[in-house]
Amino acid sequence: MEALAFVIGFALLFVGLAVSIALHELGHLWPAKAFGVRVGQYMIGFGPTLWSRRRGETEYGVKAFPIGGYISMAGMYPPSPTERAAAAAGQRGGRAGGGFFATMVQDARAANDETLVADDDRVFYKLPVWRRVVIMLGGPVMNLLFAIVLFAVLFTVIGVQTPTRTIATVSECVQPADATAAECAATDPTAPAAAAGMRPGDTIVSIDGTPVSTYDEATEIIRASPEQTLTVVVQRGGEDVTLALTPALAERPVYDDRGQPVLDAEGDPVTAEVGFIGITPQYALVQQPIWAGPQAAVENVGAVAGIIWQMPVKVWEAGSTLITGEDRDPNGPLSIVGAGVIAGEVAAAEAPVVNRVAGFVSLLASLNIALFVFNLIPLLPLDGGHVAVALWDGLKRAWARLTNRPPPEPVDATKLVPVTFVVVVALIVMGAVLILTDIVNPVSLFGR
Image (cartoon, rainbow, N blue to C red; front, side, top):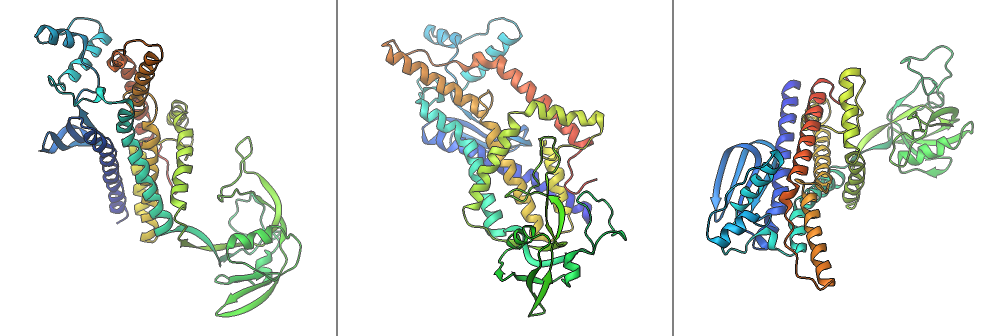
């Protein structure tokens, strides 16, 4: 059953990816059609076509490999010089000779020219700059909106695993922060909670007369009161029980506002001497305010952007673990295979179904944030590259107006095909390295 659950989780991630891609392309399709651009194809995936149907002038379809998608808009670029010359002479454009990159430019122009129809102005390159920008940003923005919805579902509908005031376990002794032994030694002092008579299942009501409504409030008081006797009221079996508790002075990790360990410059946990009693809380799903989802999406955008701009270095570090055998950085980049492995682990985990659903929703939301940030990189063939071309075209036209010059020719982005080729090759190489690393040395949620 565990293996079956893993396979189901892995497959569900690809379904979620296909939905994310479909929404991304709809983000391009809807404004393109609204602005009157002729769209020949709307395709999810690459490779052989599995299914397609034509409605009006647009063919809608699904291809074999759900690792991307596209819409085919008429006139993404202006007609090539040979096509314009041939049109002026009433002839069909031909292809000239040239080197490798020159041939690539010609092929790109030829493919673009095939989308043009005589006397048809329903082309992308003739749109005002702001409309071209809206069309190209539509895809990434759709991924961002989808991520916000998913995070809202995760935080506000499902809830977040939050420590409660109810005690799950009571330690028998106080061990050093860096202790690795699972059992207490004879020299280890008795934990204050055990000495005070606390039991698993007790719910903390108040500490020294101060009512506590969350586990964090209780922890804050305890950590600030080492070697001070506190009066603690717990609820046990429906009755209030008063205990005398004296937190021990112990060296423990420092946590930030998000509950994550604070690290020093060397990456080691920062510790401090605080009050310690030796309890762990029970956890429960707690619904968060409606704004928690959008806030989490924004925070994730910043975190992903920090990884994206270091992508070559991060990929190199991940790939080097194939040789060194070191553990992967759990916060580093993943391929779709790595994300699928994590989805499989979440599905196969020994946890309540709602927890597994929450894990999958979180993973899919993070994937859409990654799609949003990645597609904003201002390099062709990514959406950000097309936005950069449109803005450059707008700047040239604005400068011509300011200097009373004739309007310039539209920017011919096919000249950038060599740069696009280099970007595509780099993306393929990095993707291949990540896929290989995710197969040989995958990131695991639960260790290996």
